[in-house]
Length: 176
View 1 (cartoon, one colour):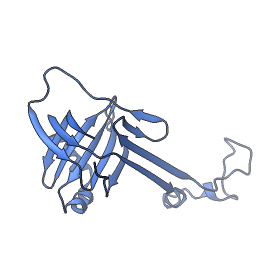
View 2 (cartoon, rainbow, N blue to C red):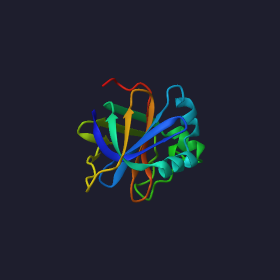
View 3 (cartoon, one colour):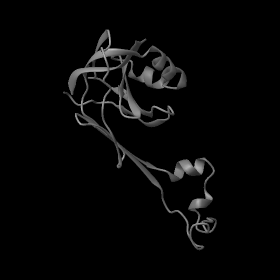
View 4 (spheres, one colour):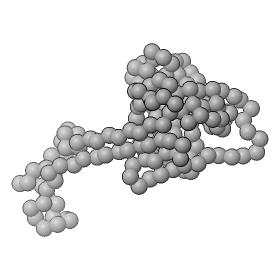
């Protein structure tokens, strides 16, 4: 996917970022400089994201972004047990009588998240699809160029709450 987009753009020590607007949400793509992915990923946290947000400026961006698909499956029982939720998985200790008669317990729990980005927009999870852009009078005065041809991080967030809905990394972006 290649073209000029009006979007928020920033660059910092060892990275460039672009925030693509959707309806009610946005996707932030952080592209570390070559050889800096591990450093940037390690620093990814509240302070780093705040720094990125503060640097973002409305810009006309010549953007080359690959199509990609990311799928993650997480087995939840180990994480839930580590958080102290273990009775749920024990047939003798589980108490789910509030939703069904006795004898009910959880044998397994799996979470799956899918994100697909292509020319049509971004589809996240099975039932959520967002696509679009922002138009307005005049266009940005600032210009930048970003070619996403190396490992990068992405975050999809709700614009009204700031909540991160999806976060991932693409280590081998497809060409083109």
